[in-house]
Length: 271
Ligand SMILES: NC(=O)c1ccc[n+]([C@@H]2O[C@H](COP(=O)([O-])OP(=O)(O)OC[C@H]3O[C@@H](n4cnc5c(N)ncnc54)[C@H](OP(=O)(O)O)[C@@H]3O)[C@@H](O)[C@H]2O)c1
Figure 1: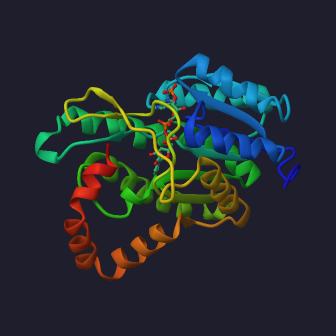
Figure 2 (figure 1 turned 90 degrees about the vertical axis):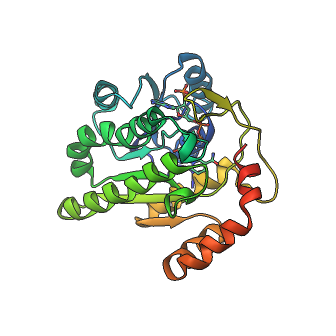
């Protein structure tokens, strides 16, 4: 795998930790020049040091992609440093917790700013450059983007919106040869103080997660790379995820009954 992406330039939004960091490391190992992004300079510096163990073709752009100016800054700084864009991974995303009856409408706004505008803000200025390289734009979604789940309404709705955006770009850019990928990620390990938005809008730290039913960030990163190499549209991760997508498409009523029977597990799993 090493060297397969020599000469390519990859931007990964939200790559100072978690899944984004794992994707950046995987792409760096394969030789791609890397553009890291996040809002915290310290976390970005730590990740940049890890990338430099592979090579020195890396920059960090500390900006908020939920803002239009942040998306533009990310693309401008990439072009200044590397003059081209081959891969844009829209990974930034924040989750939330709470039943709709309890959730403040502001939570919906914050989640959509991050998860929907946070992907569109860098994608729009990147598209002309992705046309030049016939590159890839990849959206990181979630199994919660396949059907609405309890306690995750705003999060699931924002991830469903990514499908609409990805399908439009796929058709609009077909003549320019741009690859569009959409990754439905399953429950993934948490090894840092990952936060989600509570019903009242305050941030809550999630319990750390690992074990049998949890994917590693590295396995998610490898799936993203496979999606790009094969220029696939949709990749649904884990066997459970694939089963979920299959059943939801054909027997949505059955899926709803299964969820209702397992509601306690959902409440536990969302901590
Ligand atoms: N973890 C899971 O179980 C899971 C499952 C399904 C799908 N996903 C999806 O996978 C993606 C990554 O999740 P994760 O678990 O790795 O999240 P995470 O651990 O919370 O990491 C998010 C990353 O994005 C950065 N970030 C957040 N908001 C940003 C913004 N507005 N502008 C720039 N950077 C921003 C964060 O750094 P700063 O806070 O320093 O900015 C951090 O580097 C998300 O789209 C998520 O929805 C995750």
